[in-house]
Each structure stands twice: as structure tokens, then as C-alpha cells.
Length: 289
Image (cartoon, rainbow, N blue to C red; front, side, top):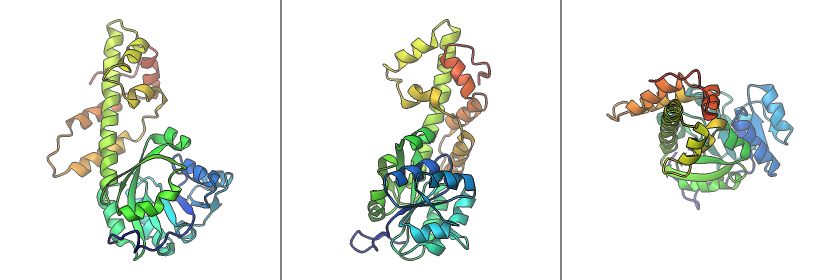
């Protein structure tokens, strides 16, 4: 859809909708509903919908039903194929959305998929790619960071429903820029985990106390949220994140050797190994690259 301005775009219908109320979408729906925002949800899992309903959300039978009832629709599904189906299917978002509706693509998806869906939106419907960073813990706390690509006026129209579940919102450019931002963030994140784990394991093997080394690193230029919160992480989605980066980088001549090294390392390292290492014990599953 072409860009609009705040004065020419249709007003946003009231209420918010969440399509996909799993580990990320479920907390988003809960925060919206408990903030007093009319919230409608749908998911293939009836139990997930029921959980959202206990916090005041209302169930819809399908994505079209969500879009018919909500002015801002947040889509949190697992794959690009699901994203296309949710928006363009017979009972998809585009079938039920009213003029003024803003659709936030908050799934991890390829920029081209986001651009394709934005171009396919009916007149009067705005699609933004609105990638989430922060993980499940940030979703639970209502402190997600939103990396957005798309029309600034559409983002401004959606802003009233963002505070209950976000801590920061960054508009990075046109549709697709949010997913680029998330990919850049994720590549740094996985590389940090690999570098931190290998460095701390070397320190342990040289007789150092990993707990003391980690505390010292937090007062040094090496400090990061990844270093501070590594023991609270789940280490999921690295395969998809790096595969997306590889596909996005095709034809750019960008060097992703660090990403490939991170992928190889993460396949040998899990949260149990991390917890052992961070308590200054042999991580067990760890193998040098």
C-alpha cells in the first residue's frame, strides 16, 4: 500500500487483536487485555486461546474475525508460509480488516515476505513489519523492543496499543527494515554467546573461577545483556535466525563466516551446559570448534 499521512489515512478502528497466542503472542495479549484495551485473539491451539481469555481477551474463530473486531492486528506465527496464510487466506486478515486497520507482522520472517504482504494489502489497510526482540522473558514482562519497517503515519496510528507490551519502538525504514534489524541483532546475539562461552571455558580450564570472571567482565568493555542474562536464556531459534540471515545475504557478498561459526558452536551448546559453565563446572556438552 502507498504511504499515507496522518491527515489522510483512515482513523484506526478501536481495539487490538493478536493472531498466535503462544510463548510470545500470549503475553502480548495478556498485557493488552489487563491494560483495559479491548483484545481479541485466535490460535490453532484452543488451550492458548483459553489462557488468553482468562485475562479478558475475547476469542475469534479465525484471523478474519480478529481483523473485523480490532484496529491493530498483531501477527505472531512461526513461519513465512503461516504468515501468508494468516493474511491472505480465505478467512485471513485481509478478508476481515476494515479501512484504517494496521497490521503488525511480529513474526520472524524474510523482508521480501513482508514487502509482498504489504503490497497485497487492500486499500486502506497498512502492513508494518514489526519484529520483536527481547525473547520470552521480555514478552512476559511487557518489555519487548519493536523494530519496525513501514509508513511512519501507520506506526503513529498504532502507537496507543504498544505501551502495555513494549519498552522501545524503533522505526528503521521501509517495510522489511524491521526484519533486517532483527537479523542484525540476532547475529550479534548468537556470536556473543559463542564468544562468551568459549572465553569463559578457557578461563575455567586455566584455573579461573567463572563466576568471578563473569562479574569482572560486567565491569569491563565486554559487558552486555547477553553476558548478564545468559543463564536465563532458552537458546532457541538459532537455526532459523542464521538460515534467514544466509538467505537475506545471498547476492550481497557479505561475509557471514562469524554466523556460520556461531551456528556450529550453538549446535554443541545448550542451556544446561551454560548453567554448568556459569557455575564454574565442566559444561560437559561443550566441544571446541
